[in-house]
Amino acid sequence: MVTALITEIQQAQASLPFLSRADRGALIIRILRELKTHRQEALGNVPAEHCVWIDRLIASVSSTISEIANMQDAEFHRVLNEFEKLIATLDDISHAEKRSKTIH
Image (cartoon, rainbow, N blue to C red; front, side, top):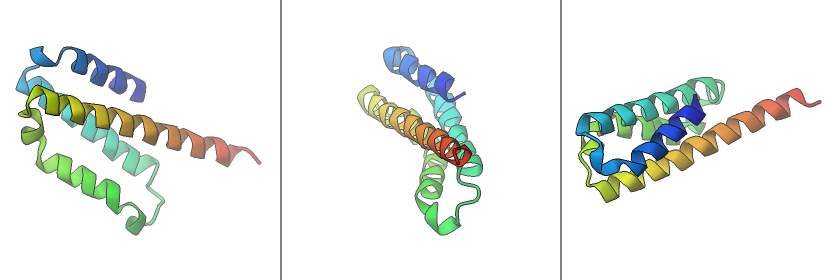
C-alpha cells in the first residue's frame, strides 16, 4: 500500500496543474490515513511521550486539509515531496524493525 501511495503522490506531482481541489484533498486524506496507520501499527507499543511528533503532525494535517488542498501548485508540490519522503522513511524504518526482530 505504501508503494501505491508513493506512486500516487508522484503522479499527482507530475499532473499538478490538472488536479482539482477535491483531488488534492482526497490525496491528503489518503496520506493522513497512512500516517495514522503507521502510528497505530508501527508505533502502537511505543510510549505516547515518544510519539508526540507524529501525533502533532497528524493533528495538524487533519485540521488543515482544506488549506493544504488550496495551496498554490509550487507549495503543494513541496508538501507532497515532503510527505513522499516521510512516508518512504517511515516505511523503511518499519521494515528495518521487523527484520531486526526476526534475526536472533
